[in-house]
Image (cartoon, rainbow, N blue to C red; front, side):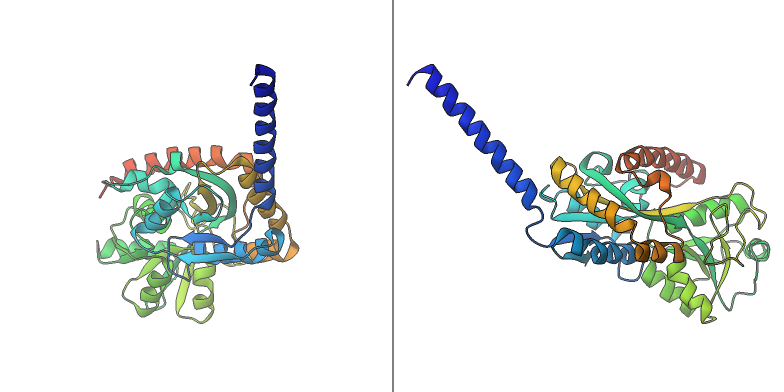
Length: 327
């Protein structure tokens, strides 16, 4: 067999391989896509994962199935996706706890979120609300601080888990207001809000969509929002800055991730589908209603990775200032 024949044969094989690769990329997705959520149903990441699934399914032509894997502040789900086949069929929808906070607050982590997960898109971002049980004798942030100072360590605040955004927002509040509170971690915001309603804990920082329905029913009281501007959906609720806590700002976010080695064409297909979904009037209206509309500066796919790097740096500073030791 001469060299020319071998060369032609090699070129033909390369051409066929390239064609096959193109067919595979065009065929994605050929089956349902799993969205892993590291929290129980009812929390913000679960809500936004289901919104993402509903709006992207007709664009991708395949179902997106939400799978709840609560526990360990979402790290069970994050690890499962980090170690999953990088084919675009197993994705993660997560807040900061499992992908930014965990390396700083957990002594042992079986995955490296910065290296093993590729960010796809910011699904939602927005302020938290400071919600208290209706029976707590406070009606403002100032009254809460005074009450907490009179009973050091007696107030229990809940969160979706150690290292979760709700946990660190509570620690940030304790630092800023100069109060002592006891943290009670749960497996997601859903179970935490249930205990807040039952009075087992006295307050929590959580997403507006989690607390607002219960505030409307009179079972909770929302004292403030953690953004620098008031939320359009809660125009009567002051910001923490307006309540007297200078420079207090704490925003939550939910980002979709794929395993790090996922092929670029698959990543781009997913990014393009969400880019189309997020501008649909019904989707934008729902996100804005819940105070979870991602800022326009984070709408572009290439903006997400630099944003996450900044979040890692911010979290390192906050954890150090709070004196939180990895557990």
